[in-house]
Image (cartoon, rainbow, N blue to C red; front, side, top):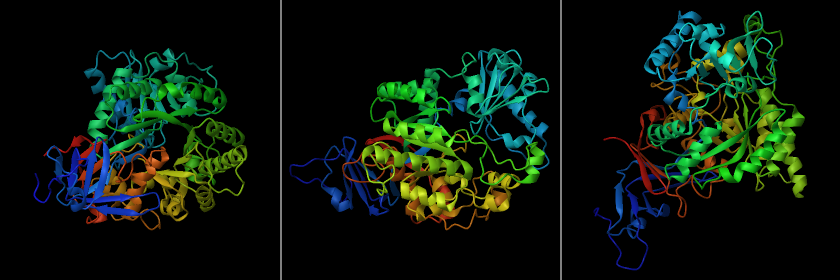
Length: 589
């Protein structure tokens, strides 16, 4: 038994596990920070938290003791917008991440780089009837669209489907187009775009949801099997979630097979985190789809480790902006003057869908980047919430917005937003889901300048404005869009708004800060990555903070987070991750 920790000889409950000599750091929804030294855990639940002396009485002969040696202990962290299921494409398919356009390179150089990696994968997997991959970047092609012929030159006898890193584009070969039954006569889609050759035949690039569905729904064997997804999820838990102290995720777009994999792992007791899924609503189909969501929701709820109570909506594909893209960019891209991006939904349908989804007991999670799309999302959610208040007989002046029993409505990404829309979000309790890794001056922001100009680029990905207007803000990585899903990267980027030495473009952008906002304080970043994410998923009474009675979801870091220079937080790693009182990850010594 550790020195200074004894066992009281009286009738009481002894802990299964005790953490001592740590520096606990936990924020609640009101921003109150609680610090301490020790935590006692019994049967997956936190018995008590406080000083070493407070916890001493909970130590019995069978208590496991972890001496934290002055290191920070956080609540289990939350990735409130990510795509673990899509990472299966990189795990089970061809990994196209990590290829960057270098100075002096051309679009043809980038095609060669991608095709060389694809060629190696195909050679190593002669048994695969369908080749899948993910991770390529549209911006690497300098305006030149990827085509079916690029892939045909490498593989023409087997279908090849390559998903972009952002999950908004599919790049395919001719075999895929044939299997999908597509031709020059295939009609255009509403939500998306099919690239075309001069005679109208599909060129091999399918952009945005409706166009991508032409491939996903019509190519036999497109999706991974349930077993492949299970294998990929187990890998994700070990190599990503546990490694970065994540014990709660919202998978914001997944297939039916991926959902079944989650359910099977939950039934088998193999999930080492809580996962929440989404149902995807599409314009023109939403009312019919919603009835289906309601019908299958009960069967999709396994236990507290997996269920679905959110409807996901894409407001846009390309950035829908309040003001047009830059004139030179429009000319180079072959777009008409004044083009500012299209919205997928009408206000009427988006409002109606949101209202009906809330009435059915779902929260709404809207993907919106451009300020035109964000404004529509805010406007329609606010209107839908007003209609729900009237249905419930609540007074119009009741400013609780979505704070009824049904919904925690969210707008995710928020690349650009007006101050007025932020105020509406605060007043209506519409949550903001932000990606801190994007809140920095880096290659992605630099690539935005030709599209939106310097002033708008500098205003991208705000955070402080949400905090100042009382908007509950949760963090997500959007993994695998920006790998790795490192929680310390998120905290550091929120606190510095600049790249860190581990970033591939650090030498180019070191010292540059994005925007004029005051960066986050540590407690604000921790609140956003813990309790606020739990709140988003109606789990704030279960997890997200270090309090007696809550699930023992805890993270021991390998250093003192409060003492660290914000510019050095990226160096801190997770030493131990605990989920429901069980150690699910330990850093190799």
